[in-house]
Image (cartoon, rainbow, N blue to C red; front, top):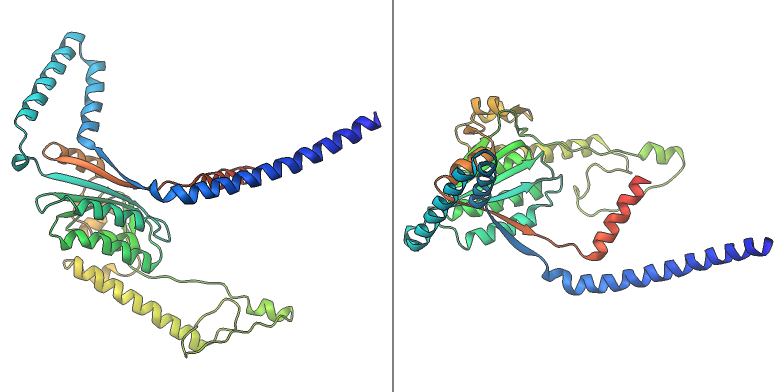
Length: 330
């Protein structure tokens, strides 16, 4: 019996070592594959929302109409489609609406994908078309959202009408993006505004002193560093940092005032946010509507295409992601 126990322990150790080796080799192989092919997997996806709405309508009619009536409906639609194909002429084509979606986080990490989508749209869109940017973001870093706003400005610079749609939230940096548009629509209870700047950081200097830990930092330039996490902050450091925050806020206010000249910037740039209905009263938005309703209504008179830039993750990234989920569950 003791022999069997020893053998089992040995076998378990051997299998563990073998598994580690196999996983290591596999990870290296996947890393090489990911590096050699990952860059070629990114692509643009285009969805025709008119077809989506038509399919949904057809599915519902198939359920509620009698079989004979539904068959007649199908024949009518087929006949109309053939007629449109015969008469199709690029010069008579309906104007188009191009839709891109920005789901923002604190780093504005969706910015690079937005840039690719805007580039793709600008390669085909004309002044008779429209771009709808559906924005959802509570804001984040100034430089990230400043760049994302500049991507939308590219559309305006080409003379193409731009509409920003807010269903849930476009606050701070999210509103910085939205205010670039010719028109802003928002759901009645969407969160809009928060035109302010905030910065915060902990300071461990007293903790370090308590444990006799020295912290040294060497800088060149009077204001190379103001507030710091580990050093001893002074009133001069705080005043300079506050000055920088105030300057960023002034730039934000100037940006909003330039793109939304009808707002009273002194009353809306307090860092507060408002729900859609109140935002309309303060001229922060132009219309109350959900993006779904707006796009469906546009599809009745225009061809609507949703454009999405898809970034493919390598197998290594996927494995790491799955492993992280397992650890979170453990």
